[in-house]
Length: 241
Ligand SMILES: Nc1ncnc2c1ncn2[C@@H]1O[C@H](COP(=O)(O)OP(=O)(O)OP(=O)(O)O)[C@@H](O)[C@H]1O
Image (cartoon, rainbow, N blue to C red; front, side, top):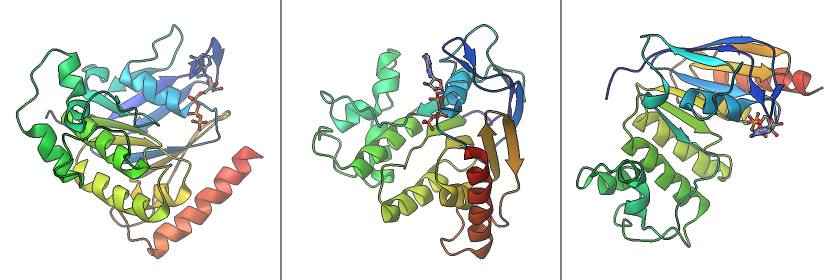
């Protein structure tokens, strides 16, 4: 996998022909975990799609990578829904990217990734009957299969119970370490635990908040993270008003 670049988004976010935000300039540091929060509909998913090269409109925000090379081919997106194909087994779902590109997936890679996300021995199962947490694990394995240095996560753990969410955060932090990660979340506790950088996006613009001290993932009872969570909730409450 190539070295993860830093990213800078410049310009206004647009959707359906209208501007969602004023012109923005947001930096996402290389190899760091950035969390993006903000009111519903402000354009967080749109921002991820712009980085992934899936939302390219005239006048739309543009993304620049710190090494000058295009960002989109180096980005993998984990969407809000795990979106597993019901007619493929879990191995087939994890191998979907290379198969769609007509590239043979490395033998055994999907099974070892499934094992890494705690789904060992389940490669031949179909998605039907999997729990929400299991589906998210398969989606994470599929993202890892891409071996891209930029990982874009759109509310990846929002459907999980609190205990499983905490475990998935730790798993994702371990497996995505060193990549440039941008995670959209509505969960202030998740951002305070996971972020190297916290960005609040509102209709008025973007604001960067200092992360708590210590390296992510911070312990669940980390006092700095709990204080940051409260500060973030206050900032989000003020934004939504
Ligand atoms: N293809 C599209 N055509 C028209 N409007 C769109 C399109 N895609 C998104 N929108 C609108 O753009 C706005 C931003 O959508 P987006 O999904 O980026 O918001 P979000 O901040 O991720 O919201 P949420 O937190 O609810 O997921 C919304 O009002 C949405 O309805």
